[in-house]
Amino acid sequence: MTKYEHLDPQHRALADLPNDERIQWIRAERWISHPAAELALAAMEDLLTYPQRNRMPCLLVHGRTGMGKTMILRKFSRDHPKVIDPRLGLTQMPVVLMQLPPEPAEVPFYEELLGALGLPLVGEVSRIRARRMARDALRIIGARVLVIDEIHALLVGGDRQQRVFLNVIRLLANELEMPLVCAGTPEARRALLTDGGLADRFESVELPRWTSNLAFRRLLASYAAILPLRRPSELDQDRVRTAILKLTEGITVRIVRLLERLAVEAIRGGAERITLEGFEALPARAPLLSMEQRRRIDAVL
Ligand SMILES: Nc1ncnc2c1ncn2[C@@H]1O[C@H](COP(=O)(O)OP(=O)(O)O)[C@@H](O)[C@H]1O
Ligand SMILES: [Mg+2]
Image (tube, rainbow, N blue to C red; front, side, top):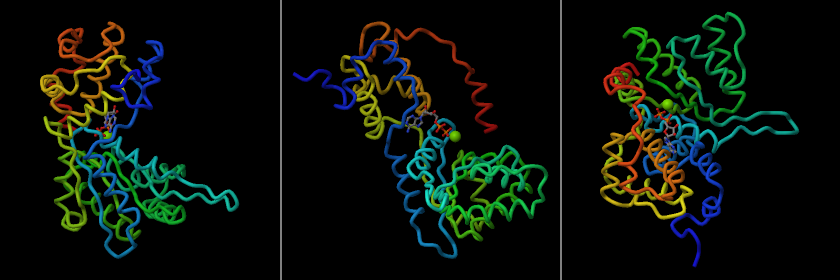
């Protein structure tokens, strides 16, 4: 009989590692695919090969903090790394990934963009010059998609500043004839939709909170198949699913952290599996933030 049949064949050998190595493995960051993420990635792939034309389509990935937006953008960027032609010494960077700077203004935006291209701006530069440098650099480097994370940072500014900034983004998309991918919270989505010129351009993919459905069952099944525990867990049981959703409110980051904790406890305690009892036995740990604090922080983000 094969050992560890509850695990993916490629992950079975991990289960024989010593406890501390397995715990390290569990705590390391890794990509887990799920349907909403695949939908977003497929939409981005589509933009990458979109023929250049006057009004390029754009994509907005929206969801609450901790739902996994940044993970998706980073995965897309990893899938399309920059390539260097060794003979010509030319760098081609099909996907440029940047974050909206905390201050939503034009020069910091170009600064951030140039930084993402590995061309940090030094010293004071005028708006016009920063803009020209950013546009030229994107062309020279062969950028095909500009990905902007943390788009909700634009909400920090007042109405006028927001409009000015949305204008910058629209002009950039128009002039470069390049699709934009933005990621942000539901509030950012509302702000983006207030700009008529942008609203028509953006398709959107939502990362909704997890609920008890097939997608969530699959997510848990994927985890159950890779966590290096020596016995089969109960992650496929209704009551376990319900307990997880109740504790995490369906937020990805909380689900991932909870499963990590349960798996580590299962190794340390010797149970070697995640069970409903494991939830109850979970050592009480005061949450870092109270619900009230979390609500206040979420409201600002
Ligand atoms: N697809 C995924 N695979 C594995 N872990 C994920 C995934 N999505 C989210 N996570 C976990 O949730 C955390 C928060 O995700 P992140 O992308 O930063 O959320 P957001 O950008 O929406 O606030 C990540 O650090 C990771 O631990
Ligand atoms: Mg993020």
